[in-house]
Length: 92
Image (cartoon, rainbow, N blue to C red; front, top):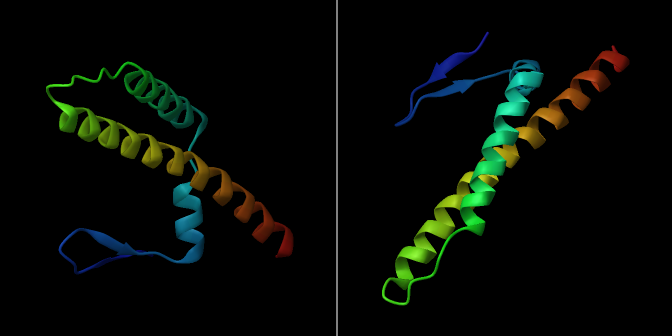
């Protein structure tokens, strides 16, 4: 069973099995995340550079690319966790 780890932010101590099972997204969750990836990617493509505010463009681009990276990481982690759980089940 997971327990809270005292830090500045909420963090939990998880066993490997808890981590893997908790990382697996269901089909609907994957679709929502994929829709978010699509929306963020569209925003990146539609960013417009304004010579009067070059820093704003860089900041907006970096922010959106960070969102894109986190969303992709969630899908990748889910896929990798699904495979790991299957491997563990086969080896048991």
